[in-house]
Amino acid sequence: MFEDYGIVDRLFATGGPYPPLREYRADGSFVDSPLAEVGDPTPAEPYNAPLMVPQFLTEAVMRERLAELGHQPEFGRELTGFWQDAEGVTAQIGDDVVRARFLVGADGGRSFVRHRLDIDFPGKTLDARAIVADVVLEGIGRDAWHRFGAEMPQLSLCPLAGTDLFQVQGPVPLEGDVDLTAAGLTALAAERTGRDIAIRSVTWASAYTMNARLAERYRVGRVFLVGDAAHTHPPTGGQGLNTSVQDSYNLGWKLAAVLGGAPKKLLATY
Image (cartoon, rainbow, N blue to C red; front, side, top):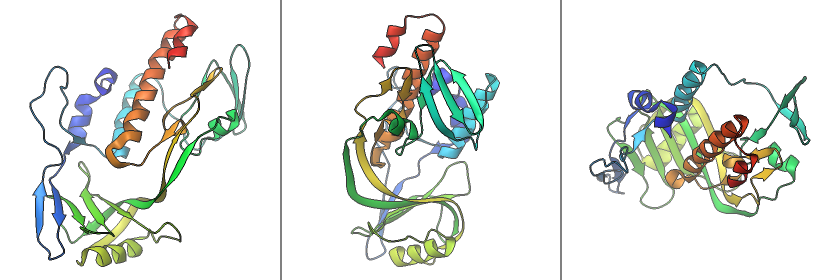
């Protein structure tokens, strides 16, 4: 899909290969292993090795490509209401009223669009809560994805390719506040690694409860759901990211075809 968008080469130039996974034992020893066993590329899988590109850099590459096509996203603009009829959708965005042929809700697990459409979102909240944070730190090398805690509680510190940042990940209690400041994360790192690792700054951080949910439908008339608005997953394995990108790609070309004159029944295949 990224090859079709014309950005594969840019992503390879932006990111890099995953470092080995370094699992630390209680006695301080460790063992390294590759993230995945990778064979030679084939015509069916030309990009068969994992490529690490931080999300904000992936988005930057995509915005750059979008600008070349004459478009740009607008930030700080909130959708507060919408109404549809046989010809299109009217959306209230701040003080502005926008008229369009279709509306796509890509607005996450708490989707305003899904709620407004009154689409059920069955599933379950999982018995798991975790933190993720992009940070600048000192005290450990960038030669491995460091994972501490053979038993719970765990903590992982992964150097983010193309940046000077690390990503911190780890489980946290289901209830209570989590200190996501540099001082709070430094204390957490000391507790779980037993090492002198200093978090100098935090560029982004979140504490989240994991969910597994699937919208009962992805479309009502001229309004569609994509990504986390339509389905949420635990982050392990990147299911949410991969399926969300595939949603958008699949719906995108079909909308473009219909806008270009293809039969509207094509949209029923999304």
